[in-house]
Length: 483
Image 1 (tube, one colour):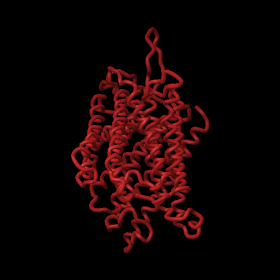
Image 2 (cartoon, helix red, strand yellow):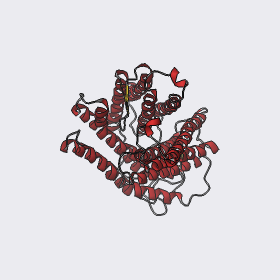
Image 3 (cartoon, helix red, strand yellow):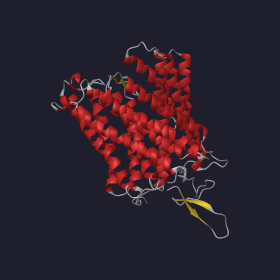
């Protein structure tokens, strides 16, 4: 929990933090407390609703991962919809597990950072983005069965080229737009005296701004990309610029999560709030190269594409190393933790391990092979694990129990180690030149090494799926009885 209340005799009431650190100017003996905004009574219902959407996205993604297996099982696949249902299921699985999950958790966090609505109409309007995003997510899942169209494995937002799926993505996009506008207009102020909580507020503000730039890029591409292009080329160009900009959003939310989780574990972050704010600003600055790419180069040119790639590679990574080092230094002296803090530390360490692994793999990429999905799987799962840790952390403030016990500690490690094996298998196979975005006989696995690498990838993927489903189980158990 972020805050408790204490009263000193003869003194005014003031907040005292669960970690035992009283807010005020950071000093050598009293470091800044990097705490998330407290869940106000008026925001609890909205925050809970975003959490339910996030969990529903993970459950739906898990069900489609099962359908992925069934679609490749002789005999059973005859009972599934005709056509290339494997790729259809893969498109919906990816969109639910990455796009919907991330936006829903962002909605939860941004709802904590809003000024309270002044009327019932304002409160109802605050729920409109949630309703649109939920309707869009449901439409994406339904389209796989009623109007699958052609599956297009575009980067960032894979698509089903059908009217139903396009409409569902459009509804989800309008919901995300309203969510961002709400975050820009109703954001709570940081306050004149910058402290650790204010620095995290700035990080949340920055993630909203990054998402606004991403939505601008999507709209810009929508206006410029010729609809006469083949579906694969059309969607690839359409989502390239905005997809890269969204990575700044996810990175900022992950950095906020790292600091908040380290603080919740009892760590003492050896950075002042001003330095943290500066690092967040540095992590945000790179996203403003996105409009420049549209102004300087044609949207379909190689130069436009490369400018987004290099901007994300260098602009988004400068703040990560110092913040990661600070978090590790904060965790180093911690030994025995309370039961409710152990899952938070597990999620934090697993997140850092996967994100760093994905970053290192990115430096080894050459050509188009499965090293590329190994890179982004590592980074994306690093973000996912950080957000899972934040869910564990926020559950008590949302009126639920804090997850504890062996399953809660095991879950981040099962998910993280599974994904680590998954990406190691991909890197192993990529060294043999195995191509990305192919499956089955299309992979043309010739040597024992190639088969072994893809086998390791499959084993890791299975463990990761179990870890993802275990997260839903752990959270559902904590939500079953209110605290």
